[in-house]
Length: 210
Image (cartoon, rainbow, N blue to C red; front, side, top):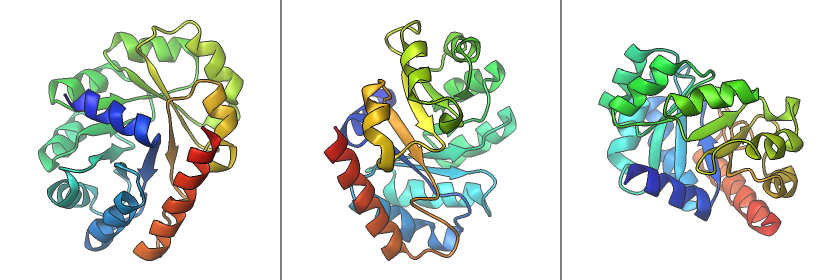
C-alpha cells in the first residue's frame, strides 16, 4: 500500500522535496507550503537540526496527505528512530544491505544512493525498488538510460544532484522516475511563502517538460 502511494505521487509530480537544515519550529509551515504547490514527498535529512522531531511533526500534520521521511540515513539505529517518528521513506547515500533490509522490516521504503550498475544491483537484491543516482550531474542522463536497460523493470530510478526543473526534459527522456530537489526549494532562512513559490515554479516547469 505504501509503495503504491509513493508511486502514485511520483506519477503525479515526480519530485522529492529535500529540506536540509529545516528546524522543528518551521517544518510544518514549510511542509504545507510544499504540499500546496503540488509536491507530496518530503525528505528531512538527518543532518538537519533535531531531524527526528521535524519528521514527527510533519508526520502528524501531513502524514495523511504526503509521504514523509528522512535523508542521509546511515545506520540501522537511526532507521528505528525515523520509523518511530512516523517516517515512511528512508533515503540513504549508499547501498548498505543491512540498512536497506532494516528499513523494509520497519515498514519504510528505502531509497539507497548508487552510482554504478553493481551498486544498483546490490541495492535491488537487498530489497530496494527505488534507487537514487547521486550525484546525478556527475554521470548524466545517459547513465540512467544505460543502467535502466539492464535493471529489472520494477526498479524506479531517481536523480538527485544537478537534475531538476531546469533540465527535466533531458532526464525524463532518459527514463528517470523522479527527482530529488533540495536547494532550489529550501535553504536555511527561506520563508514558507518563498518555498511555496519556488515549488510552484518547479511543478510548472516539470509539467511543461512532460
